Image 1 (cartoon, rainbow, N blue to C red):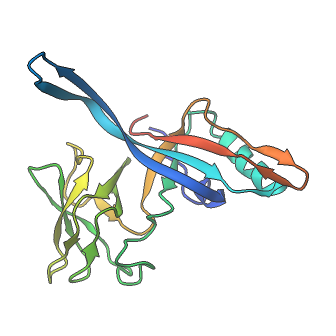
Image 2 (cartoon, one colour):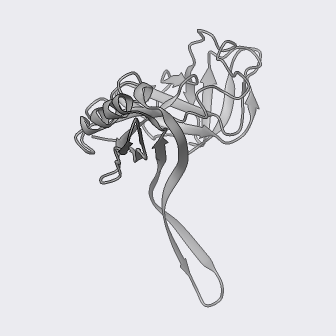
Image 3 (cartoon, one colour):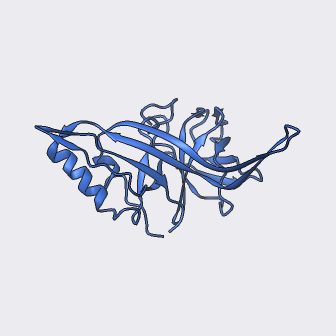
Length: 213
């Protein structure tokens, strides 16, 4: 897999005005005349983000458009944050977490439970916070599904969405400050914006999670 570009290379350049993060599911639904309904998950859900850039000077928006075009469509992935979730809700600047090295301490049989270590004592992750998981070249993005506090030893068993990967191993690195998701530009979704006298507006794109090369 081609490594995703860092936050500094794409994300930090973007004057994001609006964003809608969603979990794109691929479920099958069937029913019977009796009223019974069955569902099946055909594949793992993927994160998607609809991003609109703010009105800006021509040079700023030209640079954004050129950076996105340099990705060669969906060929090159890059890291994208949810700008509303760059820090945990209970630690708005990341100062409580500080330089703590948070990792996976063990793999739970329930892939909705992330077993963490290395947190400050009593550290809180709140429903809706985001989390990045890195293990070698694998990067995954998760949402906290239940508010949970670490114990006195800095350990926490927290529920996440979607499920953790089957290949997860103890020692995987957990990022809670500026957690990011590897994404590609959804084909045909990039709008570079319209130049209007001294400003450019209307720039937007749709990003889709990229799990594998």
